Image (cartoon, rainbow, N blue to C red):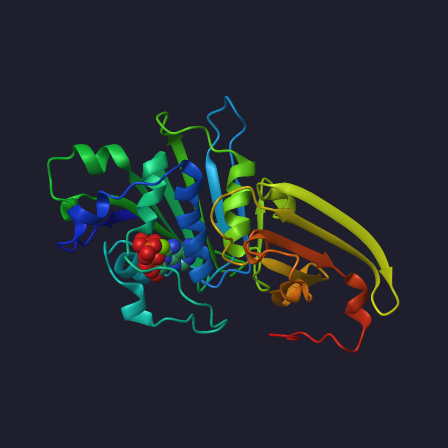
Length: 294
Ligand SMILES: Nc1ncnc2c1ncn2[C@@H]1O[C@H](COP(=O)(O)OP(=O)(O)OP(=O)(O)O)[C@@H](O)[C@H]1O
Ligand SMILES: [Mg+2]
């Protein structure tokens, strides 16, 4: 059954909606940030094939929202999540990214229509938000009716899927390599989330800069592979260093394996070094447990 839902607007709205994003890819990161805050462990983004009218789809297996949460939390604009729910997520204790209660509108900068399907407690709620209607209706945002529907579903897996259609032609067509690079810098060091773009995992190679790789066999760890980039950007990287990845998951914090004490190596260079050692051989070793190094 389709009923009506309404936005509830905070007076800060006008200022906040004036924000814009550098590119489609940065706008999409907002939606990935929402999936992160919802404690998703798997997030997939599918970009359209060039020259098609395919949608952009961002799918997460996070907490999802009930109809009530969608009305109260998603559709309330400029609602500060952290003052509502705290700095950390309840189960995985992730540092919450949401601050302003407007990130969802990033979807509407990129696309004309945003369809949100979200499942929590075996119920799926769907709402369709059309930019044209928001901008062209003479009414206050709060008085605009958004179509919302709720259905029972068999498999109760929670999560949210955002589908963006009628892409804004003024933005460049979204590129997987650019999106992967942005997401790698933000999420590449996280051990409890896996993000795929067009079916591919994020990797060190996605970052801009010169790529180096080296294979080696070590007595305690078996075959390892070192992959790193020296960033060609001007800014130091937020999470510079070499991290260890075992069985696909990052363990511990990135470090420099003593390079930081080498007077020959400029500190500035270290801030542009970003890499990983893949050491799956450590998985069977006693030194690695689930939270090793955390
Ligand atoms: N993928 C999602 N899964 C579950 N809940 C979501 C999802 N996306 C949004 N929400 C809910 O909707 C709220 C509003 O999202 P929105 O991105 O607009 O604001 P925010 O994340 O709180 O802050 P910011 O403006 O800094 O992004 C979130 O706080 C969250 O409660
Ligand atoms: Mg957000």
